[in-house]
Image (cartoon, rainbow, N blue to C red; front, side, top):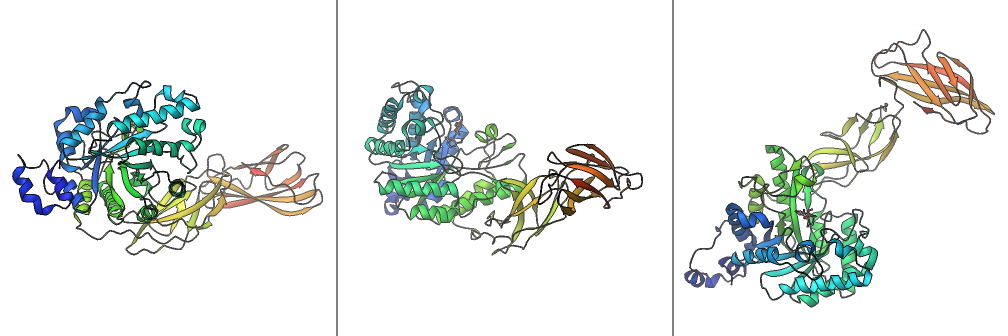
Length: 543
Ligand code: 9MR
């Protein structure tokens, strides 16, 4: 029994006075710590620890020991740290983590045995058979070293085997060994440490989405083949500007229903720096949501935060301009995010809002210009309140609105957009996407003030009449529209404009009397075209 915390977490309250009397000193952590609240809920609360501050910074060690009951090595157990050269193992950094955890009555989650990243070149350069042997040997040595150590209770056996779309990642493992390396790795890990819980770990699998469904299908199929997968790790590298993932609790539950444990393995919630109170509050809400989702699923064993202080985090190096993703600031002061995790684990506070808004209606598009368009949609409803909408074209966010309409600006001329709307509420719950609406912006004009639209007024065998309307958002005294046709088109006659023809390009400038167009006004010119084809006359590209 390494500490009083363990005694509490195993429910041995009756023996508390005896243990307290036997212990030479009080436990290092306060009764109000995250770890005690988590243990009281039957969960772990973990932190990833970095080797250098763990060795050298008293404040780092104090908080890491006092607040968390599970530790993950941020880097010290990865392949490049443990086996930098073939069969030459280096244990000092990994052992330092395990020793620290043992001193503080904490469990260790091993991270990670097989990954495409932070794996030395010598491994990546091996042929298939040698690679398979090296993988088995690495797992046997690394998991085997700590198999008898009671602190080390679980392993990420494989990490990030999917790409961002949910297909098998085309890593050197996959290229040389096919997807069989995954089952092989789990079997080797079970052989090396029969008592450890063995996990598959990935990012962007927190909510229900294509990638988490791919993960779900893989875990289901591996377990059907008796591959020893005990646990699924949801990394949870989130960002307040991208919204809280949809249906996290439901996603956790579907894995749980497969009979596996789920856990949040690498939680951090970044924001665009600098911090401000509103961003801190949003971040705190997301931390609350994540803790509450885990608390609501009995097979969710706990939450590990990827670090704990903003002083040491991978985020600013990887996402320039973003950071402040953790629960303590750079000077080890607890942030609102700490209070959020604390209060959620302690069980108080307002009941969590996990209900997303309903999907918005499919947007209607109007007032299309060269650089903008107006979208209007049927509003969503929510159990509390809809706080806003985000408009996307694919994955690119085009704008946000607090109401059910938005005039988009800054679009590119003559570009096709397929847009959809997502609603959100104050807790960061996101609706499913609305239906999509497609439109193409009109052509731009020099100076950007005017845009042109074309229509065929009439056509006959070998000929047609075209009409162009020039609409200006600011007053102009001259304008120009260029139409480019497929070859074979000529324009023998035009009116209300001056034509300069270098087929297949025809440039129309204003006539003497219609160069002046007021802001919001328009003018029209026309022409006769001839072409050699039949059927519908060709449509010009406008620029
Ligand atoms: O936090 C880790 C950082 O210090 C390393 O430089 C980086 C190298 O790949 O790995 C970071 O941790 C990653 C983890 O091992 C797997 N999931 C994503 C984490 C953040 O990149």
